[in-house]
Amino acid sequence: MNAIHQPHQNTQLTTAKLLINGEFVESQTSNWQDIVNPATQEVIGQVPFATREEVNAAIAAAQNAFTSWRQTPIQTRMRIMLKLQDLIRSNAKSIAQVLTAEQGKTLADAEGDIQRGLEVVEHACSIGTLQMGEYIEGVARGIDTYTLQQPLGVCAGITPFNFPAMIPLWMFPMAIVCGNTFVLKPSEQDPLSTMMLVELAIQAGVPAGVLNVVHGGKEVVDMLCTHSDIKAISFVGSTAVGTHVYNLAGQHGKRVQSMMGAKNHVVVMPDANKEQTLNALVGAAFGAAGQRCMALSVAVMVGETKHWVDELVIKTKTLSVNAGHEPNTDVGPVISPRAKARILDLINSGIAQGAEILLDGRDVQVKGYEQGNFVGPTIFNQINTEMRIYKEEIFGPVLAIIHVDTLDEAIALVNANPFGNGVGLFTQSGTTARIFQNSIDIGQVGINIPIPVPVPFFSFTGSRGSKLGDLGPYGKQAVQFYTQTKTITSRWFEDHQEAGSLNTTISLR
Ligand code: NAD
Image (cartoon, rainbow, N blue to C red):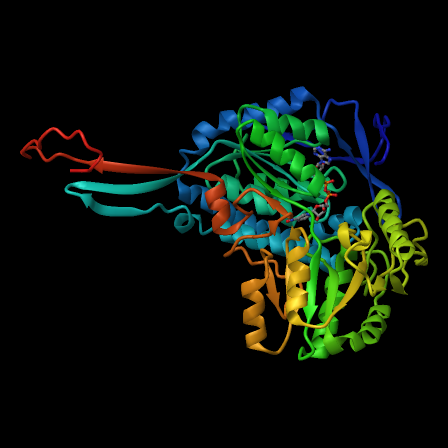
């Protein structure tokens, strides 16, 4: 973590503002953290760790705004989303530049980060049909049953550093379009691009108090998880923190979804299209410097595909490691010196535990960016499931290769891993694909797709050790998550209807 200190006087640095009741305000805290460009170590801004009073004020503003927001016509809420999608689209390039400066990923990938979030906002524009209830006429004589999907109240979102555009956009648009109010706690490592999206939301017409933002770390998160006015918490981040948030918020009676760490495999069958497969493996393992929760971390080579490994290494060597804003960069820096140290420690452990290192990115040099947190693409071969590089999420540009003889062995291996975010299969056989999709115990499966993140007409459905809570972010599950189903059973007596007999049973008559 970068030093927490008081901001310098007369500084020209950008500070991340709090958003409380429609006003962007400077925090009064004395705890600030630098926002650092991972390619250069240049300090590009500062983020406050909000005070308890500020967090309470944000929650109170959200609670207060809920009364009128839940009564606001659904078309009005939808039109704000229509405006927001337009504003995000037209500002995407400038947001991407800030995103790359604070997060490190390439400009093209930063635009992808925004685009995937934008798709959720587009989907939120269909709220009129998404939030529609159900109705059955005549469940008994004169009796009808119908459901309402009603907003919960104040909801909160806690987001990770790796997708500062997409993941906040997974959360607040769906929450508020359903009629809730929201308190967002962005990653303290790269909050500036998130704040640009929040500013656009206010510009699009989100009323005061409906969306609020507080910055900070554990103390702020714990306040959100325990405050009695907060009804639901959406968390995305590491397994350790996600488990803590899930337990703490759950103990305080909240609805919680926790999307957490991963170890994603791709199984390669001998009948796969070799060129397509190898290109997909390289992109999925090393794109975004491996800092995607759906990044490929383990390639399971079945049978004769063991002979493809040399070509995989040759292709990987063509990747250009450089600052994210430089043209033609494939692999940018990792987020922080601390993240780099953790990745290097894991690479060292792989070597110590006897994995064969085919490509070693530990000493990568990037001309002009000598201070950057760069780790070059690293490939381990012949690993086993007892090694730390297999068991732990590396969250860096490191691919581990494991060899098996059959599809069944590959399926058993993947199913024995505790994580369940994503898995891929490369094959030209429909039968193999069908067997795989039925027997693999992972929430998101790609068939000849290495990173199967669903579009927002569906939901993000990571499973097992990668997720706590039943309902995922965005799509139909998000509407369920951010609403309470109320079921009404109603009877209207006609004026001259004869009174039935007294009924002491539970039958509807
Ligand atoms: P992180 O868990 O360190 O931080 C996530 C959020 O929790 C941040 O807002 C942070 O301020 C807050 N936080 C940090 N420490 C805390 C604590 N002790 N108590 C309470 N809150 C705390 O995660 P990160 O490093 O920002 O993100 C990377 C992780 O997120 C990886 O493990 C990755 O797999 C995971 N991730 C998962 C998904 C998914 O959908 N499953 C998506 C993206 C990222």
